Length: 358
Image (cartoon, rainbow, N blue to C red):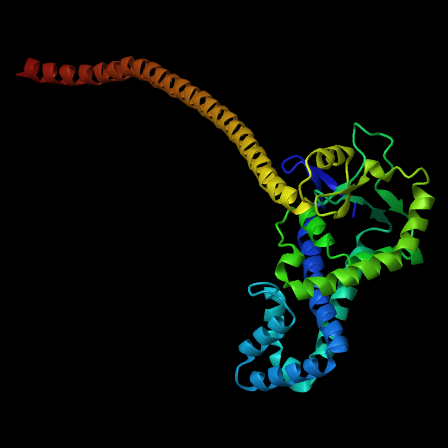
């Protein structure tokens, strides 16, 4: 998608018509992918324990499907209150999940495949080409050209969405870059819980292993892609930064100077920055609301002015009608008096004649 600048949130966001559905599909896909990934690795690494746990869960499901689902998510290390949409979907299909399949991995694989296909279809149907953005990982926002940086080549337009290179990049983001959840939430103007905060420590380590493996496999494809489109390694002005915990991430030069001076952790900075951004966004919303209110007040004054004009015209018309009625009345009165006089004369003559005969 070609992102658009939003004045209220002061960042790039998805086109309004696409944001809701794209955000929903992506976050949903990520949750199914996380659950499937964790259980797949547990099945491989704890085979006997995995089988024993699944047997117990299937037995529990005979009498209490809600508890069976809860037990499954507890085993996967997903914290209570997380992945609610996935839990609800499994409950709705509990007879299949716990009944027809002795192994729930088959059901999870099928559901994950459905969502992958739908997600890719949405990408492929949006436009004939795609857009490649680099992300400021500190703020989790895409970087693009602006008025102050006319030389910025990002986003890179990928003309052929069917190319192997594009599909590889898409596959990486779709399957393994769980950090993308924050980016999707950002460009969709939605709030989103970070994926790692939904997992216990054991499951966090499992997902991190998958991410590192995916990044390693992806490195050559990404390097080739950037060499072709960004041969001068501008990286949209982003640079590699290390925080207090030696966590590496890519962000702006300003952020590098900040972290070089103030050796705090990225997580702590993000917490502070989220609150700050929420305040800025609230301020922008209030300013926009104030502007809208001023516009509404001006429109109201215009309506009142037009109503006054109409009332004045109405009053003038009523006065004109009254003047015309008065004029007509004055002109009609002498005629009526003349007619009455004319009728009285013959009666008098008749009376006189009668007296004269007498």
